[in-house]
Image 1: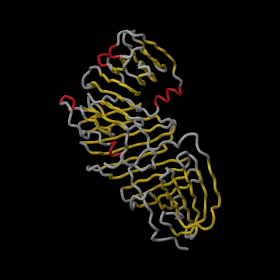
Image 2: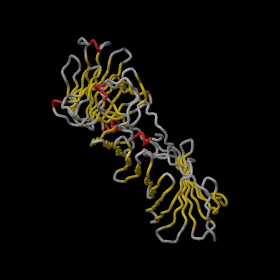
Image 3: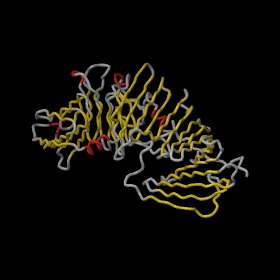
Image 4: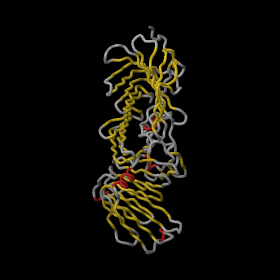
Length: 455
């Protein structure tokens, strides 16, 4: 497939696993979703989720869009994270070093209980309300958790003295925890229950003492639990069509959403966006043909008062640039030449029809920094002004301006005249830049303008 969004849309692609029991292989119970956020300017290659799927005797890497069946065991390594969205739109996010087994999952086709096992690690669950005869059960080493429909996180670990600790933190709703050999306890919204079992062999539990400690969750703790979890999911199955909509609440307060649609095993459309409050700061929409090739791609980014919108195929397209501060509005064309990673848009002023020339170039360096150069020429001018802005991954920036001629360099910028006129810097940010959303790796390189501006 070659890039992340295509992997995202492989929702019903068959698994390359031979050891699948016939009664488990008929219908998937869910699909893998990569819940990590990728910087929009990152080099987009196939992502390593750090997650694995074990079925029978075989173990392979978990890939986004891969179907999941009853009986499967999903695990993550020290840097891994993966989400599973089920056919009833419930979901689970596995954090690092976690093992979860899907014992059975016949709901909603059959109104019967569901059983999952958290063998170790930490997992966040979002379970939609169910009828009494079809409750959702999560087993831990310390006992079962009965779910009527809620959002909660389970942490199950073995301590250094080989005793076991299980904690359940509920962010929305109520779950019932039933420690082996003790009375069941309800855990409600905003509370956390930690259970320590003084036994070195839970499997042979024989009534060893159990310590229960209940506490309240702060608003920051609730945000931390939900961060990077697939907290709002909807699966739509109609004939041979599968559509999945996910919403992720990011640690910085922004919200990412994605809608994926596939018909008869072929990618059709992917829509992604990031919102900061009511403001949409990034949006990507991709259309595919019947062979899963990119047919068209639309990208919109908002930075302060500026917004940039691209609509293009794999060979070029149109762009619109707006600046609310100056009331300027530009539109024009750009071209795709190869995979150099440099992108240039040459657009003219659409506000005053003066045919000013505006050239925007940006590229990402190997250290994760992003360089953006904006150059403006007045009508007929042989000299212009270009502004450089270099943003490092830690959030620090450097900005300076310089006069230039119309002679283009190989990287799309223009030959400078004299020293920079001013330089400004901002210190390292307390937090990394806001997360972005991914788009296929359509990289653009500028070539010298065949018709440079004349006096």
